[in-house]
Length: 291
Length: 220
Image 1: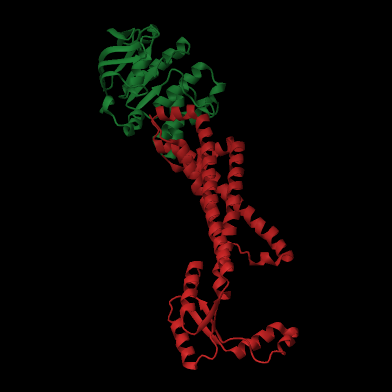
Image 2: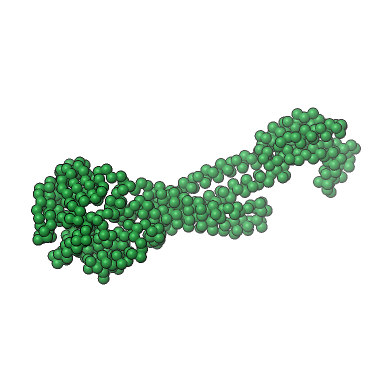
């Protein structure tokens, strides 16, 4: 069987059944668009939390008047930890200077203080891979247990909130993607099933004339693939339009939207996903051909 | 070429064929006759496996139909050209496309399709109607398209179920002449008909069916 004949039959069918096919394309496109928006949200949330280590640090405040040697030993001990990226010693004088520069015009409130009330401290930056709330908490406990460390402070709540949000978004994303993928398969399935049903006399003739299963299946699978691919491309156009015309406009008003990025991979993933889901739907709809 | 051994076929409570045994040799042209409901169509359907026998053995060419694997059924059917009683033409394809379908299913090179289809249409005298759709044709013309589709791939066996049921006597005689020509080229032909005029003076074997029983045979 020439594959070109199957393409010809599929093209003829797509044209003859254009309205039902168009409806299927639009439905699948809507599904893929919602999926894309979910992926975009999850992707950006993930990207935001991945950047977190650059900003995140743990402060360990040291006991007063620690001997210099003990401070160095303490820093050595912390640096040996696998999850630690960088350790910076901040003497109390430096801390006060930093505080004054932060307070700027209101720094005069510190003038009344006789003695520097701030303690010496070390600032610990963690590696990217260690940025889980549990890991950080356990590390903070180990840090607290080191002799000479008076107090450990880090944004525990902030960290766990971000990670809960990230995990939640990922879970919602996965569920959404699965549901909408199933929806896409179902729409392709229904379309091909209807076409298959409408062409049952034609298929019966094919079978009686000795057509192989692949001869019968090929046009329907091509049709499913074309519907899925078309929906994928339209979905991509939809999500690109949403990004460039809506989000880029919103950036001008709400700076929060500036962090949103569009993953380039999506340009390939969306049509491919439509194509594959279209084929899966068609294959399921045709089912087993019996002679 | 076609061998039936004690073949029976039942539909619910009705018996379509009862212990039918016969043999059609390679290159032979034979007729099956009998009144409506005598089992002629069922017998043909058993050969191209549109129906399966309940009892007995059927051999078609090198295939034992009872034991054939499902994946081999298309190959069996491709070796047979069938003229269906209800024609089974595709309404949304023109005459050319309907006839060409038999070749495309057989994977014939697209360059060969056109000349072969026109040759077949010339044999049934429908060359001038190649662009027409079945709905624009008379019953007899549709039947001739069905014949063209059955012969276009030059199958080794041709089965015809009432091939002259909708045509006038002249066309009918023409169709029988066509079958004889094809038969002369080596094809085995089995024609089911209740029209006795069709096999009169043909000097071909005629198998008689009555209520599913093979009741005898004669030379037409």
